[in-house]
Structures are given as structure tokens and as C-alpha cells.
Length: 167
Image (tube, rainbow, N blue to C red; front, side):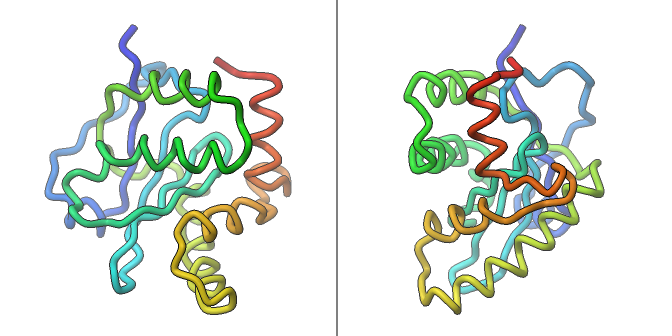
């Protein structure tokens, strides 16, 4: 089985990326964190917000160049997972499982709702914390309780997932 995941992008981001998108096939994904959803935050500079479908873990990285976002994303995910204190073995396994990707339209309205909420919160945290450090903002967003994961936070769910991997 090929190691892969789907990057589900909002229409606004798909337009910016100028890439062809696929129709996801069930069972293709073999990463612990599942598929990812992405949108653009049109700040200066522009930012991409990505959220794990399984844990709602947020990752922020520069949007430009938009066409290379899927290739640049795993490196930034590795930084975020390291900052959350996960062991190198877990991180290496997850990144190795992300060698192939396909871009798709959004399909889960609940996760799109979280993208919208995190977009709003990220703006507020950026102003309140007076920071443009994307890692700091991602870690702060990860502490947010989310109803789709039973009011758990993505950070707490990530720690639980590491203890009891689904892969």
C-alpha cells in the first residue's frame, strides 16, 4: 500500500494553488493523523492553516508559494509534533506515511467549521499575544476545546493518539 493522505482544500485555497484535485477513495489514508484540511489566511504575509481531520491538530505555515504547500507541509508538521513533545519515532513514522498526497475538495463540514473557528481565533491570538510566530499560534490553537472531538483539545487528543495509535 502506498503511504499517502489527502489534503482537502477550501475553494479559495484551491484557486490560489492552481492544482488539479482528486476524488478521495476510502481506505487510501494510512497516517495516524488522517487526512488534512486547509484554508488560506489572507494576512500579510499570507498563511495556510491546516487541520488534521482525525485530531483537529492545527498547523500554520507561510502560504507562498501556494503551489508547493503540500510538499512543504510535512516539514512544518514535524516541527509542530516535536513542539508537542512527541517522540521522534512517532514523528518519523507519521512523516514517512505522508510521502504521497492528493489534493481534494473539502468533504467534512464539521472540519471546515473548525477551520473557520481556528481562523478567527488565530487572528485574535496574533493580536493578543502580539506575535507572528506561527508555531506559537499553532500550539495555542491546539489547546482549544472542540465539540467534534467531544470537547477535547487537539493537543490532548494527540497525546492520547500517541499512547494508543490507530495505525
